Image 1 (spheres, each protein chain N blue to C red):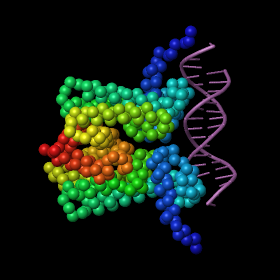
Image 2: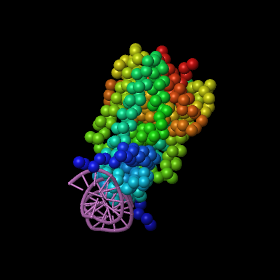
Image 3: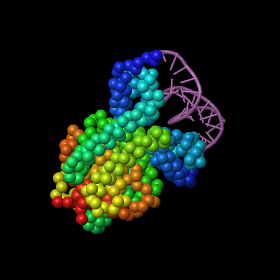
Image 4: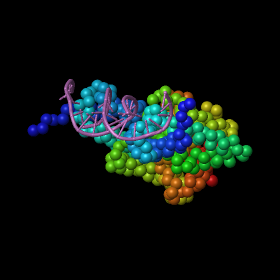
Length: 195
Length: 195
DNA sequence: CCTACCGATCGGTAGG
DNA sequence: CCTACCGATCGGTAGG
């Protein structure tokens, strides 16, 4: 009979992913060595390989979990019983006002997904496209007159603006997160709806 | 009397940087080996080290040249004798409708600058900040009533939208480059100026 | 779960 | 004696 999994197996998996995400976000996936991740979470390199078969598997698990959580959060915001404008604001807040933990993972998704081999990227890119589809659907509600072929391009313009905030915006600075969300939402909405 | 530098020294330098930029843009700086760059431009690895002391020097030279050319092009577009709105459109066109060569370098600037060590990043980050300053100055002309502390955040929102196009926009697709530029410019301008 | 390693491979450099 | 390279290989380190 195989030995039961340790009680704290899932906790340790999360701890490893948190340490790795912080390291990947700071120095990037290629420069983050398994040795460094191990030290950061008080484990041995061998222990890491007990939880993840390869370094790529670790990155994949991190990004898959993050993107699925992000999609679930977006779907919840978009499913609310409210006017499209209100749901748009909710979406922006979900996307920008993430926890520090989610922000680090989002940076890794933006910067380091490309270091997975193509076959491993495919399911993650499908999740990213689902985010774009959800946004495009919301834009259609906001501006029913917009040519359908332009919904995704506009969604991607918005995603670009939002993702880029990870490179320059610091929540502790002069602009409060709520204000940033409002300004981005208003800029985009007015631009989209202007006659 | 020292032997003169080979006549084609500058040509070879450019050929190396072009091959390296294409490779960096496709697979990223860390995975692009000096050996691969050498093969791509029909040179030996030793020849590369004759032109660039280290791999980092090669990346630095590529990005410094690109950012200085970009700034020069932006300054020319902004210096034109025309209304601010017209100069804004010129700026967007400069930034989006780059040559394939410049697009590859821009992708490298976005994705791989972080793999230089901190000290080497500093002068390049200063050039990037100059781009933001130039845009912020233009936004001030477009909307003199906007709080000065918001000029750079708005400039960065625009930069995000523009830079992100490198990840999804293909010039050969359904949307012509000129149309993309017009849509981005109008979206942002209307959003910025809406009452 | 650790130390001790391996097979492979890297950026950079030697002699000529 | 210089610069411009080449073929070969170094010391060190990575993931596993």
